[in-house]
Length: 278
Image 1 (tube, one colour):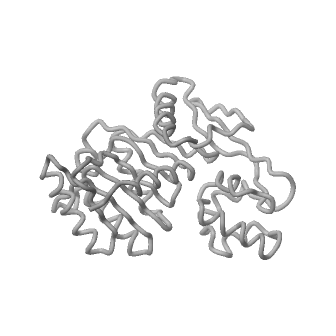
Image 2 (tube, rainbow, N blue to C red):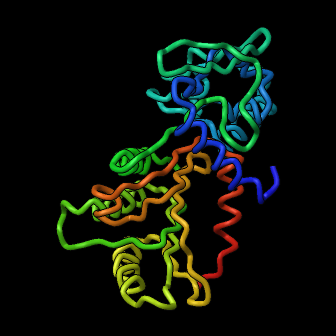
């Protein structure tokens, strides 16, 4: 998918979620994937399998030959037990792969399809969620708490207070806890060229995060970084209007999307890495 098509894809998703009424769909998986014949892109259809895990599976298969048991994914550390239990019904080691997309509407009706959703918009896992208002805070905390190897973030403003009940403080603490368990955390914040208050708030949280070995950068004053992006484990994307402030996370009318798609995550990571830091 071309770079400039990301915005169009997101607009399409918003349209589908907001305006489709009774035709609103969610995507799920049905059928099974043969681990001994699956390609990298097919492995990406499975929840919990991203770039690192898919490469590990392919390397193991190349080195040791065909798998004899699907539990190998736990034995070699690709999945933990809870992750394995949630997707084992979609795994096998022989026969043709017959993984299908399940479209499920509001009434719970299911329509099986062999056609994948548009490339770069969603994966076959169907993990696309609309996160209005407080739902973003709940899902973001959960996802950070479950992050396995990386968290990349760009925020216009990350504003904390001295209150432990402050929602942004709780997000900050989740990021610190993730770093302590070995997750690589990288954060980009705005250095405002017109509002010193924004810069002061971002520098305050940056100081606390750096004290906990988190990589935090501020951009240059020449251009505003107004993005609100979180990318977890190079596949789970949070994208929308939410800043990390107590108001945005709990009181405002805000709207964001959570999208499980490694290809989209890769495009956004490239975008973030291209923003100058100071």
